[in-house]
Image 1 (cartoon, rainbow, N blue to C red):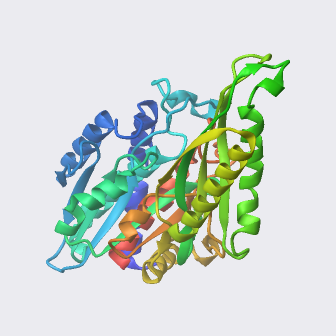
Image 2 (image 1 turned 180 degrees about the vertical axis):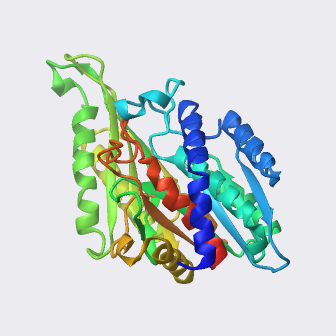
Length: 395
């Protein structure tokens, strides 16, 4: 390990307790997308204590700037700060469980925020070693369209700071603390949300012939949607169509007039997503017409695909090897169908996103993202803060 890496690791250990404290504070006080007012004030307060200049381009979230030398090299590091609209479970978190009903950090954004504040402390202490400057992006609303990353990018604040590269990360329960995973090229899928209403004719369950059964029609539509990836797309093109919510009916003996479907489409290009949209609408039109029903269809294009710049991905890999050893750095051979609004930054700047291992039996932290028992092993702070700082200082 080189001298600067030794210093980075020492600082990560020094600020470990601080990051744990911050994470637990945020975990107890979660705020959902676009409502992160207390969280934003807390972050700004912590940055000001470090002597870091802050800016607030949006109503929530903020930007911090650490000035190094006069080089034109400007690296941005991003953390998302919002919580999910859900309640949580889990004894492993009982000391710092959410105190706000209907809001919970069950996707690790509390960890991301605390980690970037820890990295900020390390970089502030070592700012004479920074070639250029570092822009710290504490971004709101990753979990909700239109996506905080889109709005931050559109605000022009990162362009005004001269950002040349951007890096982000996400906790991952499938890897252990002390491990990371990265992949050059396509990493995560583009996302779409859709909403459908099937409108039939309600009536008595004992007289189905006098009705147009919206539930039966909806079930036919759902089944037909599943043929789109297998019969309408190139089989080598990854895609997912998932209906995640169905709402219809009010009693066991009533055929409802309407059935509502909500779901998501995942693909690695908007072109593919739009082909899927066309086929979904054709299926809806055909099935409802055959049954005498009508429909409404809303297809909301969400986040583009996360596609890692190869040089930036290599910066993460090499920093990970220097810190953790090659045996703890996984270069993924397949992308994930999950989505991330970090993709909006990559449309403007070269950038890369990676996964940080946070899963362990000890912390009961192997639950998947968005599960009510989701947790992280806080020992991962020793890896993540040092790695974020190392990407800047060793890049």
